[in-house]
Amino acid sequence: MIGNPESCKESKKSYQELGPARSSSEFGVDGLCESGQNPGSGGNVGREVDIMKETAAQQRIRQCAEYARSLACLPSVGDIDWQHWQPTVHAVLCYISNRQTDEVLLIKRLSAYAHGLISGPGGKLENGESLEQCVVRECCEEIAVEPHNFCLRADLFFHFTNGVRMRGYAYFTDEWSGEPQSSEEAIPFWCKRDRLPLHQMWDDDALWLPYVLQGGRVRGYFIFDDDNRMLSHDIVWLPAETREF
Ligand SMILES: Nc1nc2c([nH]c(=O)n2[C@H]2C[C@H](O)[C@@H](COP(=O)(O)OP(=O)(O)OP(=O)(O)O)O2)c(=O)[nH]1
Image (tube, rainbow, N blue to C red):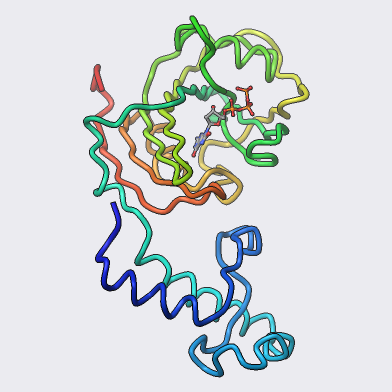
């Protein structure tokens, strides 16, 4: 699960020399970080004063370098035995398309988890519920829309470094009833299919969503850290006519 232990030790060592790790909440929205300057120079002596003197651009470069070094120790999807991997959580997503306007119905999430992120409506499977029932319930609860004749086009395996393992099922349709309405959980909006706000969506969406919205199917494997940042991925592209995953 972990890369080369020696290089890992090395990079951990040099990482520690830099002082305490910064949480990724200190990184900018695009997942990059905000400080610069050669991290090897100067050690920890007078470090706080040095940081005060850094320009924003220098800070950004330095933190990016720290982050890049730390990557050597992070898990990769290739290290996981996916055949025996069991999800702890099942969740659905639903993407409703309007063919006439070439738009897709998205939501801005308002709940604590992933607040402000944009995605299709969806949520976790409840006890005794089928995936299809979950799709309808989540869409009705979140945006007062009922999708019809939806089909599964993305089978997503999310492994989080905190131990959570979520299997996500993304459904697609162009049939629905009801007018989208805001709720406590979401603000719905129509978005042109070729203008997805990918920088405001989960990292993995940029990899597979445009392809699936064009009719393709995917099976995707992802590792995320505690801050919802994607560390590693692998995507199996399946032709549109694929019936089973
Ligand atoms: N596209 C995409 N969806 C994701 C990712 N990670 C992730 O949790 N989701 C989806 C799966 C679920 O549909 C939703 C999270 O479910 P949730 O149940 O915690 O959402 P919620 O806060 O609305 O809670 P609830 O309504 O189920 O109680 O977000 C991701 O990386 N990409």
